[in-house]
Length: 588
Image (cartoon, rainbow, N blue to C red; front, side, top):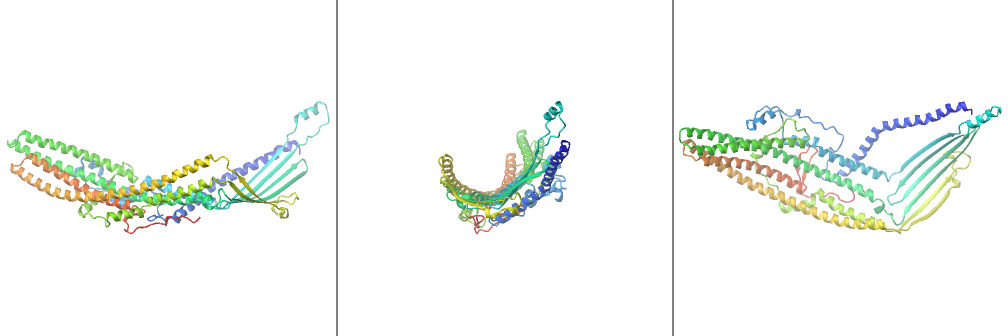
């Protein structure tokens, strides 16, 4: 080839790889969406597969990329004005009213922590897809091509011109080499590995005439550990743990739904309680100001001393301060509740007062189980206790794996190699199976230095003991939670009875004090005390009602019998224990 032809040819050869590289990049970008969809399909299929092992688990609300925008415009707007809110009343004009059911619906759609739980569940399933894929045939392919040449030797050309030799063309040496490899690999759950590789190379020399050589080879091998790393219990431990980790994450997700539902209900009632406290303090302030106006009139008639009226004035100032503080606490609680729902703090929202009225009108309904039943059901229904128990089995398996690492590494190796027939061709049909070379042998790895194995084994022993203690502590804490919820129920019932009696007594006291005051025979201190006690007893009554409802929800949650739907609505479960299958999540 002449020197002036080289740049054009080189440019063509250089541009082809660039074009191929550009095409590969374009193909990769086009398949990103396809790969994302494939990952989603595999991950959600695994979640669906294992959901039957978790009571109360639903797969309808686990999609992480689902649009979750929910506006407040679909809820009715407030048109009423509430004087007891003072300056805060204007902020509720036009605010959207939601009841507890709607609040749960909002939270399960917009709560950011709940979205994080969905993503954790998805990532755990995605991780399992990779662990399962490891035990499927994995194919690989690679190819490369290299073109090289020697440039014209300008030093020789200058020397020829200097001594006036006849002009000559200096030949260029060119080489073109291509290699390709196609292979597959399969890991067996017993620890073995099967590999198959086809290699081909093609070498061409270009010096004006074509000369080339080519060769191919097919190599297959099988390796099976016999001591260290042998057996599915040892070799497939990583897959086993991944299978169980997804089950644990499903339990944690279901448990979180229960916790979130109780948390939303508790905060909802807390906001209503804060609002009711504002109302009670405003009523007390109004009553105090009315009494103060009357007493000042009596003072003008000479029937009251300045000291007596001053005592009532001081009481009105205290009531005013308590009312202002109650408004601040209510506003703060409402803003915090908005954040919990997943809304913005400046969204215009108010809660439905009818929820409080419905609770106040109804009687307190105790749970239909005894304390002994509740404690027994806790051990048979709590998903987190199942996980703690299963982690003991996990640590036991890891202890076996650590002990297996002390054994020598002995592996059976079988190998077969098929070369080409030597006709200078690189096609697959030219492999000559008559020339197949077989070999079989044993590979021995004697563990001379076992410091890392010793450390891992000792750590595995400690981890097992920790898992046992963690389970025992978790059971104790679960029972303690049930006991606390039961005591809270009993205390709320007692507080409710006391508050109901206290309200009736203080209402009579206030009526009597007001009547005596109107007749001019009353005592100002009696009037102040009666009004304060009535306000406090009404607030305590509201608190007792809310405490009872929250404690009962917490009891069902801690027992493990609170079934929560995809939109947060709950259902108190049956008293019959539901024991899920805690064996191997997927047969290995």
